[in-house]
Length: 233
Length: 318
Image (cartoon, rainbow over all chains, first blue to last red; front, side, top):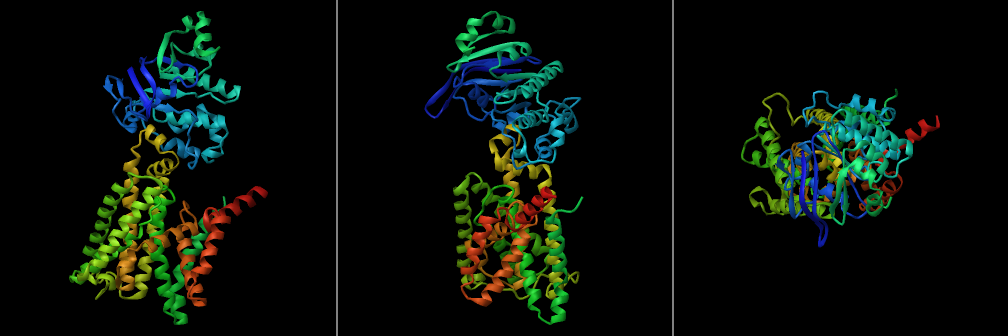
């Protein structure tokens, strides 16, 4: 479904990705883990067309997307829950959700407002509140709900649980498990090894701009030295 | 549920505007009619600017150029004895759309202070073009031999008819703005104001949306220009001068940027203060300036925002 093939990306003269390679197949939950500053968010920005890789290629469902503008990549069916949530503060919760709604994947049972509110009941109570009046957890749920409203073929979550209360994290992990059960393809970036090994099919560990380890949850759990060496766990 | 203060202000404002012709007739002061028309025309201009500035974050310092283009098309058509309003008006609106498309396509490639400077430069370019058009009066402007002719449907030379036409068109513009803002289009424009990259990453080509908003605002400002030309029966390059664009920005700020009815209130208060203060001193801006500073400092969101804030704090207390 998504194939990131040896991409190289830079911020000005500072190169961050050095031959980054990654693959997500349909219905899979794949993770990208690594310490801060290793290039996780840069990989996501490159996939989403928010920055142009100067080497390698990215394809989605067989179509090369590495030179497409951001909005066209999103229209192909990639939904992003960005780091820092980035909800629209000057729109209400309802507007944040319905402004972005479309069914890019042709989902026969699409995510609509009612379905998102049923998944995140705390948003329903704040439906007419402005985006910037929500708590961090509510904002994160809104960010996930907003991405789901685009009915993506591939959902990407960049540090979706960072800085959130344990209860909210649990709710988000539960949401991802449910989505996986429905066959949703997901690429997750996070640091919570325990939760990720429970949910994900495959893991990729990034170090200095390239994947240095890639295998299943069982393999990762069986190699605590890998966790220690690359993730500081 | 009680209506918001904004709704109440809109109802009162339009109710007052509706009775101005009667007051002018009873008091036999036709100046009130003239004042009301000017207020409403500028309110349409301010509404259009608010669409891009208040909701879209596109601070155009050249918005009055579209008022001028709308007015000039009417003036030039009349000069060539083409007075049929059914031809004049669509021509003027089309010209505004074309110019807004070109200006928007250029200026929307920039952001922040560069956007302000480019819109200012493009408008000044048109201002000097107007000054250089000797065939159409140049610096002195162009008097209109007659108002637009709508084949007896409405007589714009009859001042009350023109007044009510402007009144209805102002209501129509307000309704259009409300529909636009509450549509997905409006949400994308507002969302792009706060985080353009995010809106693109969700799948919206924000440039196209912003350009469309810019063209709609340009056409609406052009309508204000058409009405202004028929109201004053005169067009001149000053209509496009950057200070006129500054006036529109002040009206939007005064009434409440990003609130639907704010620009209408702003235009009305601006014209009323201009009239009242210029009766006191020729240098009325000396009094108006500090007033505007107080509004900006203590009433973020303008006069309407101030009212809404008071309502929400009262609601919280109660």
